[in-house]
Length: 217
Image (cartoon, rainbow, N blue to C red; front, side, top):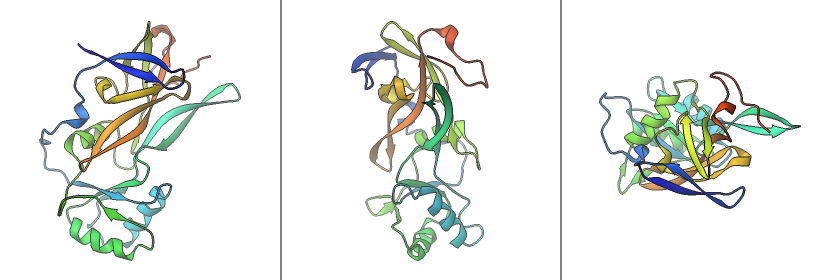
């Protein structure tokens, strides 16, 4: 399998991960006919608040779900690693609906900037690859992508668990000190670079047990 070389932005070293194709860019249609997910552009930092507004003004049954996906990572404070959740797609929310034309009209009632992303003259749902990736690790009401874990093998980063396992080719760079991987997604024809949690330890034996937080120096 090919190796993808990355820049560790915390140390400016070149790292490598074992990489294949990026499954998040797959164009394979989903097997089941699910309610489409559309992407709405909103002011950065207002994602959660505007989701509540959209759900409040929409008649029953029009919006099945409106959410701003999050990702889980860790930050170090006072010498301790703390679990935190951050916005996965700043400036965007996802609306699950079969009536996107009606949703677009409803957005005119929102006093803040909102715009359904489109390709040409058509509103296009989130691509199957990106949707499947978010859906595989989250569920309705709990849309937070969990943290991935990796180990160092020399100058190589090997993802061993979590959402980035098998999706290393989507990683553009890593910041070991901030427990962050920068990944590229395609949203309605637009390439968007975002961050997800990636904890890297020096040795496999330092990986935390399932369901526990890591403790590292």
